[in-house]
Image 1 (tube, rainbow, N blue to C red):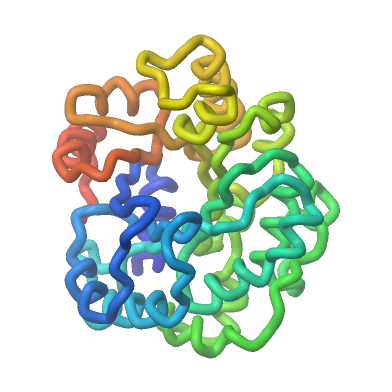
Image 2 (image 1 turned 90 degrees about the horizontal axis):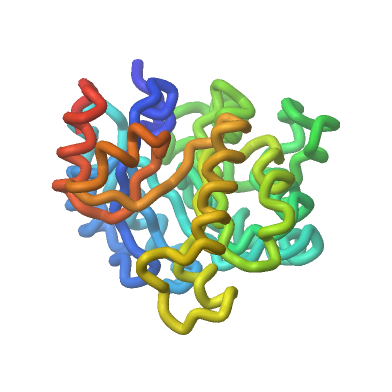
Length: 292
């Protein structure tokens, strides 16, 4: 049987994954979920950093994805990853706002993206907030005990199509837990993070990361994202990419049909841009066999 999380299954095969969905404007209705169940993308990004924090709509959307499925690849539903409004500036701030992770996970999503990650302590607090305390991998080796509470697991188990106890086992960050079905990501996108990039990306439990060029531009004093990328930003990109590779984390990069081959060959495994033609070209380049 395939994994529940198609994105993780592909990353385990060293295949790039392609996502759709922007920072705002995602329609979270049951009807849209039924339509999006047939998406060309490997995961759907739901932007709640700047979009509406709509838990009722998210629950309805996920049910629509289930009822519109399974996917052509045989998965119960497409993978859904939510951009959280929480800023990863320090551990205290993350813990104070961890109720947002609980709310998002309680709807049954497959991952969360933490924006503006600036310290390893904040990232550890993020991972801990997304884990049940019964799961111990990594505890004492960069992580403290999980802090996610009981209460939502029966509903989440129904979304995932498994028993309550299986959900407790599977709602774990991959690749820290090889059997986990949660994909947690980071954005390195502020000047405050630059000095600690390697420490941040060494925290266990993170599955993918990116250098966020838009917010990093503003943080470094550019009113608009400069093109071509200036040396100071390119240096950050290269450090994030190298730290991802050193820690077994998938590196996120934007691609186009013209650039996707080189980006894949350079090591990117999560592809932004939201274009089906990019995904088609990239899948051909990497020899992908899994159906969409």
